[in-house]
Image (cartoon, rainbow, N blue to C red; front, side, top):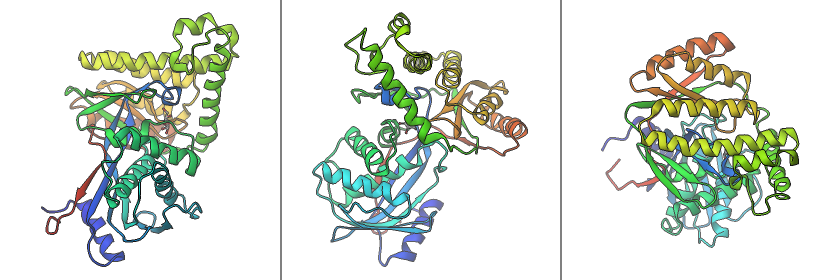
Length: 395
Ligand code: GLA
């Protein structure tokens, strides 16, 4: 079998920095979320798909406990002993190191490995390049230690999320790691972020996804994300005075929220209203997708964007213009910001066959509105993480 162009680049990279051959290629995709934004850390529902863009680690195990990886795009090394907690001056090695610490914490007996990392998920754009790196690294750790079946997919995703929360210091939910691990070609996943149960939702043939990268900076993202999380927790705390059984916004109905509105400061009420209504929209979207009601799916996506913009206040000028540019083409059934917000990407559901026209329309309209050239990606729902053995002669 001939390696594809990307694999060839990685093989060449390995040849430059190591002697001999690698034994495995770990692949983990980025993601786009169809709907269900800022619901994961409220123990609610999300509906992401894995992208055809990914992070790859080409590696072989070592006899000691050291990890040595060279990242082609960063042109830099990660080099650490498993268990070490001292950080490198660069950010990317921390994702790998943190995952190792979490896996060790779960009792997995790890071994060192070495190789080359390369990715084509746009970085810092809300398409989960970090989760993809974490999951590719987790797969490499487990394969090198001959422990690939030790953890279930949800356990692996949880470990990677904890690594990001505790070692990297980003307080994300579980959606990105989960879909990167468990995504399936041709499907979205409905994930219950409380129980971690999930269901495959076939992605229908009549529609496609178009993703627009605003290329606008997301400087506020970290602090505002944490502030939103805190506001949701505050809402739960205040609502417990009237409805003691609730432990997360997942438990709150629209009626409860309206009935106890007076317990909440106005901003907190609007944050809660977004989460409660977004959970409803996710479940309605699944019904509509399964029923072939694409116009309804589009309207739910539009409503999600409005709610994120007005109630949750995580949109931006660039994201609003991107969504408008997408909607300006008649093939677009609905569009919304995707990921944490404040910049990054928007996703549109479009009629199959119109993807390229929508892309052109977006490029023109967005560039004109923002004086910024966007990137537009068309990706089918793709497979989740996997490890390919490189048998002698296969590449
Ligand atoms: C980021 C986080 C996810 C999720 C989204 C918002 O992508 O990593 O866990 O909270 O924002 O839906």
